[in-house]
Length: 381
Ligand code: UD1
Ligand code: UDP
Image (cartoon, rainbow, N blue to C red; front, side, top):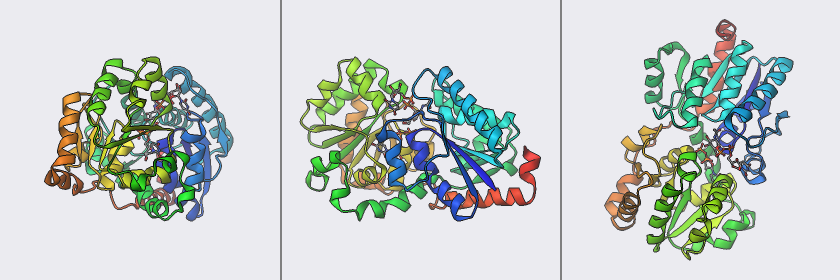
């Protein structure tokens, strides 16, 4: 079979890595299309190196831009490739603009779309990601959902149960396949940012990431978060900063305010192996990232999520994740409990990972093979 994958951003590369491995391991032809939405070495190329991934067959080089312009460029580029290459199926992952563009284009060309990480819902349509998820799920034919809860969301929207497969999340594949590799490396292989910090000897660590439009494009929210971080001065805060966040914090005049704090270490985004190491050594993860909420519970690290809703409610009900929004008091209260109350921290750490066993990609490719053998793929197209 010829299996096409469209991806364009850091989390898609990480979460599709095991799928690419399985496609090749099981003897299929992989057609890899990179939209070019993320283009800095630290946001794209480094992940291909760390995860030993093949060079994309095509890069559309869309770069940054408004949602409409960026999605339109992706659609034009993806359409051209799909018409030439005629894959048997197109896989998209998650909720970025690449997912929207890929799913729309392929479905109109009658190429069946498989949505990896389908069925997530925040029910917050002010988020561009929620629009992308909804639209991609309308265009998809096979739904690979991480949990039973995501399957139920799709069934409630009228999707046939026969097309929904609970596989777990490929982020668990990524964590399990790479954690040992990450820990067994020689220190000389760490990025300069981590080497300079000497993370093995620096004491307790809070890892911070934030990049969502609703968090980092809002000066008031950012200011509240920074005020909380100023008070958390008895823990090392490591902040691999997303390029979007660096730009907005500089524009708001907030970058230096945070960077000048002696317990805060702002570094460039790091590669996946470095990041897994950092997570595994963290006492708290403070984030608005989707993938990190999943990785935190997979690696037994308590997560505080800088949002008021989440499309990953399983992490909250399992007890490993608390939504703190950008509320200074909530951030401080919960961070203090994790730092000072061992019982509370241990309870968060022991939350059960709801995202499967780390074999999501293998299950997916077997399901696709079955659908192909029984001609279901052709019927679905
Ligand atoms: C995108 C996804 C988001 C995902 C995130 C993962 C959409 C709508 N958003 O958000 O769902 O969680 O990726 O990180 O698809 N920039 C650079 N270098 C780069 C890439 C971006 O400097 O390599 C800067 C540019 O100023 C750009 C800004 O970051 O305008 C935002 O980039 P963009 O790709 O539009 O969205 P993300 O915030 O990265
Ligand atoms: N990540 C990384 N290096 C970093 C920050 C994050 O490798 O400096 C990884 C992290 O482990 C997770 C993914 O990037 O797998 C999350 O990406 P991001 O937060 O950009 O996107 P989201 O998951 O919110 O869509």
